[in-house]
Image (tube, rainbow, N blue to C red; front, side, top):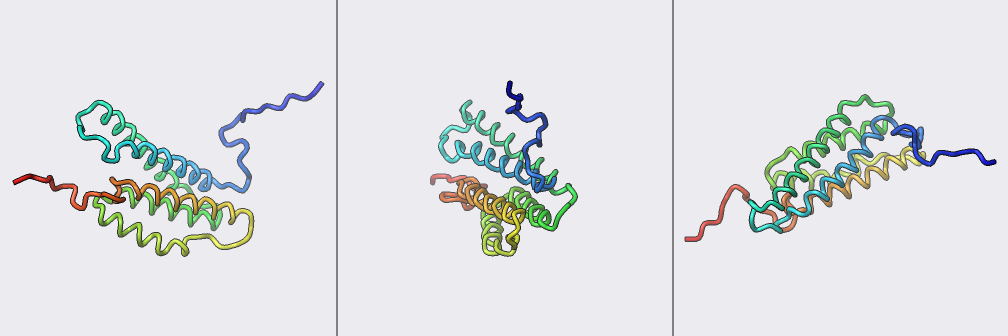
Length: 171
């Protein structure tokens, strides 16, 4: 008779490598929340002509909930104490993402992201250790997610409104 080996984890963190710290685990969750936020925002990108449409309201609510979940997770990441030197870079990236999401003006957000991208190499953790390679992979995924988010029209991507407060009025 063979031994029984469970295929589902008994704990939420079971199966994670001991290489992970509390911050790296939270950062992985932030990346998942960022992906969910992008997926929830995509349907809202100028597809709707009637903002009073029920479908628009459903998508808007989903996007707001996804963004709220992301902001909550970012707050937890930022508040978590560092356990390793690599945690500092992940925490700083969380602070940058929270700041980016807090900026209201498209032009300010675009400037902040361009500064972030120009200086991304300063944030990348150096080293050949497996832990630093894992952190670098997370960092690259973060930058890909931020790029995807900023590619959305509502976040300053192609076709963004230079002044969203202005309404076009025909003469």
